[in-house]
Amino acid sequence: MKLLIKILIVCSLSILNANLCFAAQEVRIACPDTPITFVYDQPVETRCLCTTITAAIAFLKSLGLETTETITIRMVEKLQDLKQNDLFGAYNAKTREVSILTYAKLEEYSRKEKKVLGVPFNEDVWCSFAAHELAHAISEPFLGRQMKDHVDGEYISVVTQLRVLSPETRKKVLTTFKDVEPYQSREEMSLLYYLMAPDRFSVKCYLHFLSLKNPAEFIERLIQNNY
Image (cartoon, rainbow, N blue to C red; front, side, top):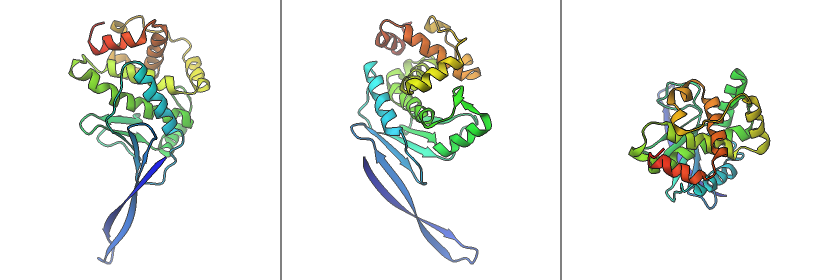
């Protein structure tokens, strides 16, 4: 794993009006054989990130969604400029940068809300959110202005997220939502349902994906707006 450390000099003014400077480390970790670089400026455990990201890239490539452009995934304590308190990650199309909450922050959230994706929080779940946002970053140039709404992008991202979960964790998620039935078509999918029940939306999309005889063909039809 390639590790690059960039030292940033930060100056602060003490209560005695004396200028004090200290060094803050911005750490960059490039995942081998991928265009992905993780960035963080606080001590953080990267855990399963590179393994999960590699699996996500391979899965998306199998659907015809591939990128060679460098994508930065920044681990942060707080997501900027977002009003929803329950968001764990975000993708900025202008900067091509992904942000995800650190493991510690999402673990803190899970202690309050008890479960994430309907299951107890663990590192497998945390890393899956990085895959979710990466899927947005990779699929967005394909969908681009052709996208009617955000449902197409969310479909690809939630399917990717559930796909990269370990079989054990994925089974727990599907068991938690065992009453959920798969979507029968793209026309049934709605942004409103996604906003109201994101976890159930994710499971409905994943079950729909499993039912497809030719998943890559369906993704191509999403890209072309040809449902």
